[in-house]
Image (tube, rainbow, N blue to C red; front, top):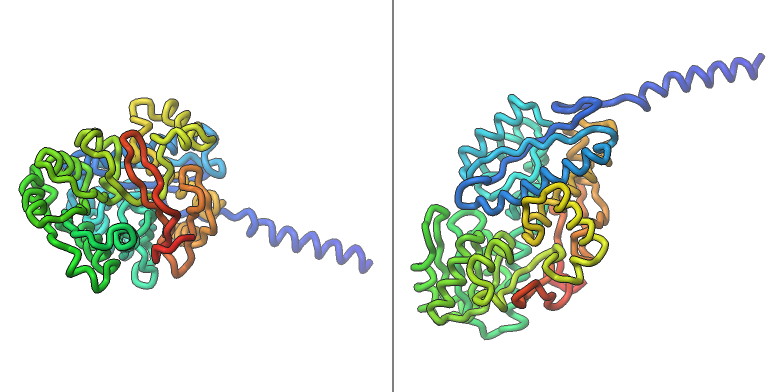
Length: 405
């Protein structure tokens, strides 16, 4: 009798637990068959070249869906054009949240654009994650717990530039071309912080431009007159291409060091002229598929196969496509970790629980790590030099404090 009673109680306990184990929790935009997410991208306007990042993300989720989706659900990415205009970013984001009922905002591009939606999304507790901009403010979980960046912060990137200059060209005279917004100003601030008490002596000139400017020719004339032998490009591809070409045509041959948004062989160097761009440098965290060593490894072959099948109109050698592919893989990892708890709260919880995530197109030794107090997924980079065909590594992997790891 005792044994039978025990079995009955045990069976009852199982029945009580089973519904809780199988329970599905869904936020807006989620069903048993679909996860709906949104973003804005500059498919038109002065930063339209960067729209290639969004196109690669769309292609990646098409691949995911063909392979069965994530935990059996199709991922629908609604990617809207904001023309790199912050008011348009807010308008389109409100549409995605209030009309299209997306679960989260993913990968939206631009410092000013994301600033325009930052408070709105946090007030409404909508995940605003893995966004395509490096402002330090995207890693502030205490004040903005619903927003998370993806790429290394602008402060980290510019400090690495500074440490590289201090170690390789300690007597350099530096000129800075920077975009007159949060992106350009934060990079300039990071450079000065990295140079420390040598900044005032080493920086010979700093000149800004507006994204609405047709060219930066006059800025380059001004910067050349400073006598600088290193030129930092805290600018978009279009303007860096103009700057490289103008400097070359004037006979000025500084060491060009480009920020991530301009560090593109396809969108900057080929536009400026490859011959004019040889020797230019950048800091990066992704493999360069222009380099045969990476193009022919397993990850590179998978990437090229993906581009051929899902994005045949795209240039597979454009670094922006590699970035979009890798960012989308990061979000896919978070969605997998969420399982059947696809609430907005769990999205943020899982995004802040990434441990040593290795993705195929990240440079070896660079991993993604987050926590409840660390909203900067990528914190390592490597300096690279353009040799006329691809990027060549200079030195080792550098961390947030620009120390070898």
